[in-house]
Length: 337
Ligand SMILES: *Cc1c(COP(=O)(O)O)cnc(C)c1O
Image (cartoon, rainbow, N blue to C red; front, side):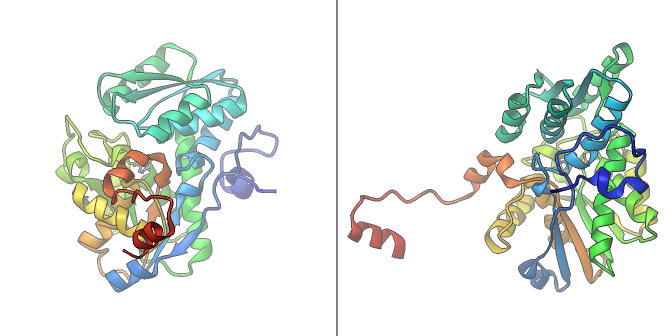
């Protein structure tokens, strides 16, 4: 029997015992020590493997709360703008709750697995000829006119759910000096900081953006964000102020990493740590490798989503398969080459 995070942390979440709970058993993800990475950065590094949530990303932590709250309020439908994972998660939790779900995604930029999930769970998938920022502006306007619950991370229940990842980390680590995390719409870093503060712990928060989509680093919105890390291809983060506050008040920083650095870290994690995350997730590790974490000795990198979400990018990165005749000599040559 596995319990979801509302059951596990109800005393610290805005849900009463009699409230409806829509759960797929999210949260309680592994915190895995990373020996190869630790050796490279000469510190102790753990990976918070959020790809092991039910739909394969941390978005499920927020979505169990957002959809449960929507049901409590009597909503019949939910909507979100998404670079992919929010739509997969919203579609799954909406299906579970018997709600209708619509998602707006940017044209051509959504990873195959995420699209398959949203469609399989029965969401109406609307492809916008534009980017994520435009899609978010549109859904925010739409919910002003219609009784549909918005489940992007502008929804406060999303952050409430996502802060529980910080609880899980401090329950496992007595000491933590720094957290490294990818930043897109900046909801997750905001949620972690809230969670840490609620338990009186204040690790330094290092946020990493893709160089082609790094508005917080530039200090201004980016009109045409571009990066291989599609989950953080966002030019105007909704939680801008809160994220900057988390990094400044924790004496952390926000920095950019190039797509090449992201892909290096992505391959390194798969090949050396045995952990397959998606490209956006690898930005946390790419950032640690490129910029360090202010001399911190005990570091957690958040791996936000599973590598299986985006098989296309993976296959572009690796050696081709080895064709072989079904004969022992040929197999021997192929195996031992
Ligand atoms: C949503 C997402 C992010 C970015 O999180 P924000 O809260 O938007 O900053 C990073 N990685 C993955 C895999 C995501 O799905």
